[in-house]
Length: 171
Image (tube, rainbow, N blue to C red; front, top):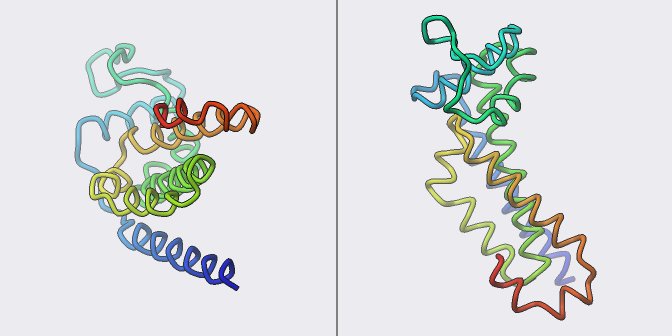
């Protein structure tokens, strides 16, 4: 009975986080140098021009912004164009995925602290702010936590318990 009640609390918390993050997704344009740079680079890739700074004269190759985030945006821009609602919804979805991976990672190490860590992360103003603008921070968080989770998952359980102290230092 206690596990079912905990599951109900967890589902309520997940629903509230999804509701909070989804409520503020809008179609307003994003103002910012890096955000517009990533969108222009993704548009350049969709148009077949390559990874070029289309906002500069002669469209030179881009050397300042990394290419990974623009590649994540390419399918969205190819299918829907520069639709800010879809792009922000993608960012919120990636943020929610990162919360799930954080929960799984912390649950693997300390089951009692996993929900508290996810709540502190989800209700952090900076994470909330970055989840609603087009910057590479949220996908970086998601993929970093995913790769740490996969690396720790690949280690055997007995090896994990034997070196628990060193894992605390990693996380």
